[in-house]
Image (cartoon, rainbow, N blue to C red; front, side):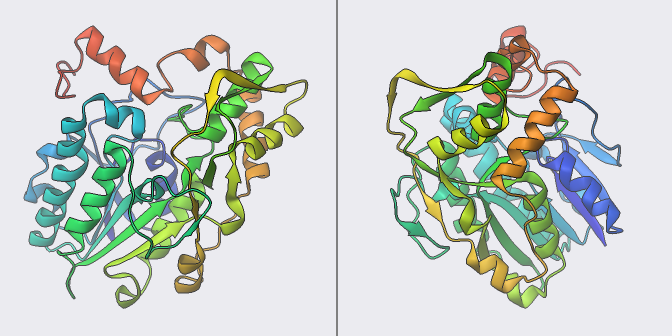
Length: 342
């Protein structure tokens, strides 16, 4: 099977691609490579690739592929807030256009990387795939709009599936510190403090990027009748934690560190718990392998093996919004987030 992975050089993509190759897939990447200078402890596995902005995709780019896994887009709330109208164009309009082009090109499967951010501010309630959307950021809104638009494109010969990933964590050569568990471990390693910017009470579901990747593969290999037009929360029910509980895992793992709260720490409106039972029941081949504790240990080991400094942690290489702002300030990116120089 020929598979096109958009965003193959991003945080999740560099983990997903080798897993696809191990299972014998013929994989091609599609990525503008915004983070080409941001490698940590390794480099993406080289594969055939189309270096191109997803907004510029053409039908001929997609012809001959059996499936598309669509990861590309502005990847989190701060980056989405940078320019909400641009987030709309990249995350929503380009995704809808890509799916239409894929269907016209004869692609049979389209798997969209959605998010539990769709649920937004939901407090202590458990949320399943039928729960109401309540996004509180342009990023969350864009994910909701893609799901609503693409669900109308699904048909018998064009299987569309939405994976609503919990908050990702884990080691990647395109590392990110703007994710809660990665961030807490990095604070502990570089400063001896586990710095929490909220009051620690918000709920957050988390999932390792390898398990996210396995979820994509499980959908790719599923009977289309089971997954067409369906959304799946990706994670484990037991991996819904309050932020303060995640901080305790870090404290128990990283020697000599202590929990510290920001002076103005208060509740975070992004608070939600998600029920991930559906994917486990529908796709028994999907079995998450990671826990929060194991993830903390992996991160700590990585930051020790490839020593992480405070300067690197606070720099712009591994913070998506900071890196993009740096590229804008240097003139390498246009205000539309297009490369000015290659």
